[in-house]
Picture 1 (tube, rainbow, N blue to C red):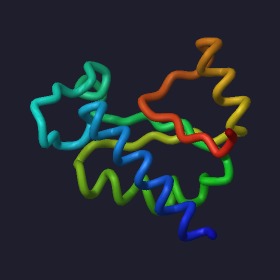
Picture 2 (picture 1 turned 90 degrees about the vertical axis):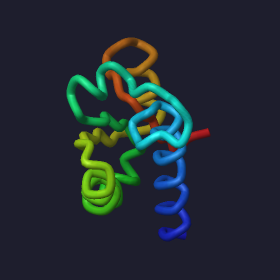
Picture 3 (picture 1 turned 180 degrees about the vertical axis):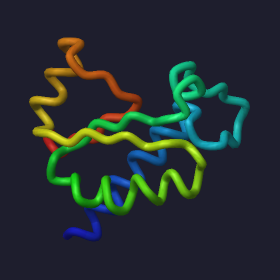
Length: 98
């Protein structure tokens, strides 16, 4: 189960970042303005993914892309409400809630 969650999280982040232009593009997609300005991808994610995102995904992402990684983990519903309310902003949001 843990491995499946890691694969799903990595796949979701990779897919989202490639559409956002933060990863080297296969198509001619310009990077997000804030990504190119800061050189860091901000990721908001479910707290249950904290260990994986901070110790595995983040360092691997930075090593593979040369782009910085900044993560914040919290309750999925709480973080979603903070995004909607303008309290938090990120380039990627990975939820564990449906």
